Image (cartoon, rainbow, N blue to C red; front, side):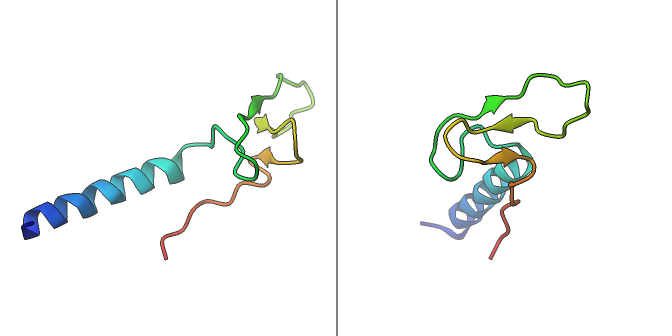
Amino acid sequence: MSWYQLLDIRKQAQEEFDWFADNPPSNCPRDGEPLTNSPPADSGSSVERFCKFCDFEYPRDWVRPQRL
């Protein structure tokens, strides 16, 4: 394995991390179930997606991943 291959692996890992950090989740991070889209509300509710099986709501409970 060459240094260029290692640099490509690092670059791809960074791109994947950025994509997952910038896009909303499609599954519940607590139980893995697909999130349900909220119906449009006139009240201006900020809930966009929620889990039917636990109390997870996006964006209220979403914690953006951080690089350690």
